[in-house]
Image (cartoon, rainbow, N blue to C red; front, side, top):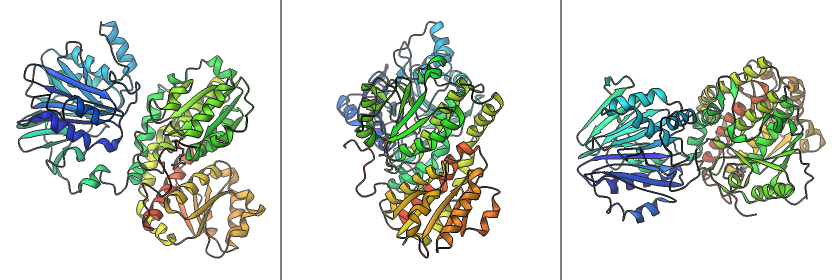
Length: 608
Ligand code: AGP
């Protein structure tokens, strides 16, 4: 996700801003920019591409004199990566400038109102709405203008703001996106995260939701949304620099596992409005949705596993046939695609060679292609007819977790949208399912609280030779993902098996002490799963079960149980996968593997 920095003090600001932004590169970005007050006006330099470009454009900051400034690295959410869409953004007369990390969910409504009031927009970003709104509310008092904007915008934000009328001040405000403030001896700083300011200070103030701050070279004043001054106490940072880039987590994978509640919320909340699902980017009218007679999901790896899960969701809710294909198979089997088939390509990176080739194959056969992608402006996003972005933010660890979870959410919303248009579910059921989706972040948060318990259990299996994951229906799809997580991070051989298939071969591999993970979240399949568990246990397996809270009778049939909170049976994958991600993570680090960069693997497989 984006990174923001700001400095005000006695030193030249630009080099400090560029250094701070370089410490936030790990957050992933596609463009960057800085704004500096040069003594008479605010100057902005910004560009698409890496920070190196910005360093060259500003001669490492030397060509931007001034001791007050703000900077930004952009991870595109609204508007493709470009010089124009890069931050900072100016208002019309260049008297106000803003950088932003987050998503303004009601930006379209605000943009419409501002255009009606004569404002002109030059970018496709949601952020530009903020600077024009500040202009609209500014009548000489920055505090008042900022407070009003905070009351109007919905969504998540960390803002850095400068007013040319007040060159001795910078402002910052926060809701949901991280924001810290620290003093740098002869000046003060704002930043999205600790790494950007750790070289100057280990004493930071964490800005809480709907608070904002005014910084001068030698003071910092904190306010709430009602412009009342508040007092805050600083926090001492104990991390070393490396740990700081991971937000205090030991590895990116763990950090991203813990980012899932926010990533899931960021993916569904802009698309749930007043009890309706609004997927503007789908680009399909209700008639076009009704004309779709089949859905063909094509992806690789974990993205493919989300398709396997959502086959059940689409078919169960929207009663539409779904075929799920590995992209590397699809692209070479001259697939039969009808005109009324919607092809859905799922990809975190949007650059996976097999998935891009599958997209082109589908388009060559005249199919409409929808992409579900995390990286804005990536090849698959650009070449699809329509793209539905997951807002997981940049995912650094090779083993996907938060992007996987947001791909599930995107497909749940799509399936519910199709079901509503095709009238295959009633309004009451629809409303209940939206409520279930909105509760997922807090339920994931709760499951993350099992971290220590799972780590303790995982440490008993560091020497495992083979691990089997079994399930039926959606639980088989969950098992596929759990198995991949384990083998790609710990190098332990693992496989997922449809529990009903065990007796057709795989059960020959079960012997004394073999670890079998059984997922049982589908009540109607529970008895059958118990039979499969008994089958493997009588042959010596040690069975770890993941099941819905309340299924206590399972405890007499298994050796270890992890309970997940109650949710709609179609959404259990979003919860059951959490302990299984943690299980893989702890086994991997227990075995001393490089969990963020496992051997032989790449984050994006851009070759065949
Ligand atoms: C999952 O943990 C792996 N990193 C891998 O299977 C990945 O899901 C696959 O390569 C697809 O990548 P994509 O989502 O970027 O297309």
